[in-house]
Length: 232
Ligand SMILES: *Cc1c(COP(=O)(O)O)cnc(C)c1O
Image (cartoon, rainbow, N blue to C red; front, side):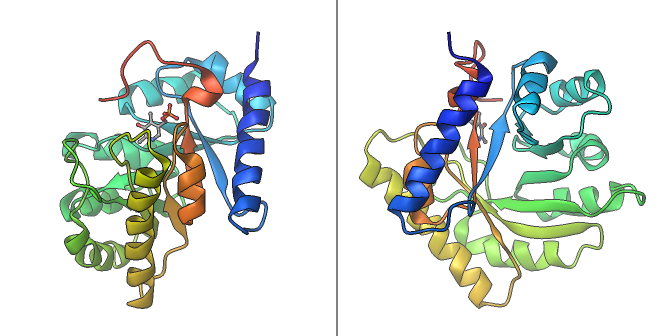
């Protein structure tokens, strides 16, 4: 039986191989372990193997997990949809949020971020391939949203996040990731300060790294398949 520790080792090897293949520096891609639907024990096991950054989709579930893991030195990333009535929980409990796609949600997160905490680290979710999963800002609106977020005092704009529709064809995966990368480059060229491109999951992390991802979000390859579907 493979353990979470073995799986983390295999994923980090996949990342290293993909970096080498793309001519990128080893260590230029961070691994976010997506622990949604898995309990506190799974997080503890990954933590014991050295993993520190964890991604969660379901806010209520995440907050309960954090309470159960009280005191664990981990960095929590919200990667699921953020409704207006959940912003306070996100602002209070998370270190990062990757799924900001509206100014209104960003404003609430900034207003509700407790003063004793560092700024909330923010990626804008971009609806790059206009998939049936309609979450995310349209690419043409991303610059306006980025400028608005950059001005909010309790948020720190870090970059873009995308969740392309699943494609088994590596060329198709690469094409969408390259579009996200191009948008990222364009926003930076327009003067927006960003250092994070959050893209790539279990099935497409190689393509994402090839296109320039700096943070891959991996669940299944670390924790196994989920009993619940990934949609929220
Ligand atoms: C579930 C999820 C992941 C992880 O997906 P896997 O295919 O299990 O690696 C990554 N990002 C987001 C936004 C997710 O919802």
